[in-house]
Length: 223
Image 1 (cartoon, helix red, strand yellow):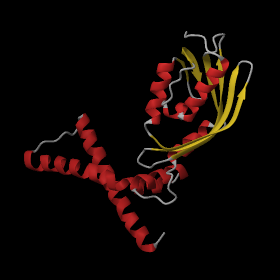
Image 2: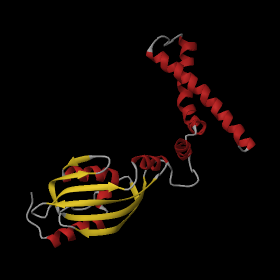
Image 3: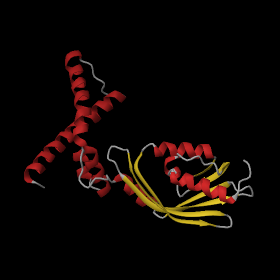
Image 4: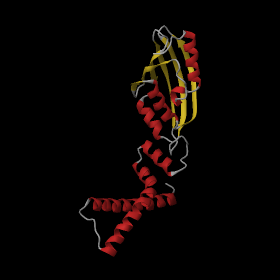
């Protein structure tokens, strides 16, 4: 759908979209696109400009320090092929840095409207997942970053030591209330689903306490 566009007009509109980081922020007008344009990348494929704006806008709202550089801009018989490099910091507790290179093929119809938007990412999905697990700071600044560093390194002990303070804060009140109820009221949830939660909380509390002791002695001996 949409009115006929001149080829030069399409290229100018696409350039404006790129200048607004549209495919990582959702901020562009996408005025050169057909409303039912097909969008695809290594992770997902769907139709519709409105859905694209919604999907990318949701992710773009989590991005900070976006840096997008166009490294290729080549007009072809079927449309436009671009290459780009991009990086950003994701607004998550451990603030991972996402960086990738790739390109986009824009296929035009006989009205010079973009009917296919095909992204390629010159990075494996596995590497993207690793980037998402790794904090952007070189030195962890909080427990969440310590946990994510340990997770990305496959360090189970490090993960548990990072998580143990939070586990203590969650399980200690639960266990205390459970024990107080048994002592004062003779109420027990044994044999019920709630009793299973009590048991799990008790064991997690013990393991977390051991983790805190381990972390204390590791700090003393510097290992």
